[in-house]
Length: 213
Image (tube, rainbow, N blue to C red; front, side, top):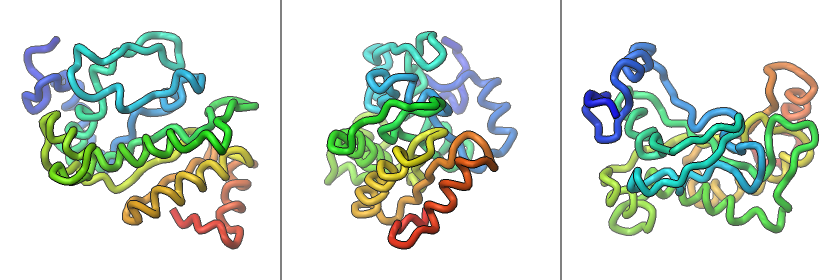
């Protein structure tokens, strides 16, 4: 492990790579990025709760491209790095549907609640009062008593269509009910202009959806 880390953080990033990122002056930092959000299978999705706490105790897991990740860079390291370089953290969470797939496996709507709870817990971990919330207290125990001031949350990665929309809506309703200040980002597919993008754009304009994120 490098002796010199960015900002001398324990379990911090390699200094030269972190400096290259910092010198770009990014305004936001997305994480964990791309198809790792779903990892190719519902039983192998990225679970943020497995990436915090003692580094030695974090489980390894295969990712979408078939090699192992150790989670040495987990959510605390991510939030702290974003904080250190003045970038807004923009985590993305599993939405109940796999991405990058022509006929994606999906979590049934009546089984979606545990994944929604994970999203709510992530927001509480990032922003919750350490004196009054369970996940805020855990953040403090992990060395960061101050909130990370999370403002944005992405729901899904490269997902679209009739299976995605109701699942996004379920996340939207639950998160906005508890954290109305959080700005949600939905997916419109993998490309900036195609049939899936237009389908999502039109869905957002339908009366009664309530999706202004």
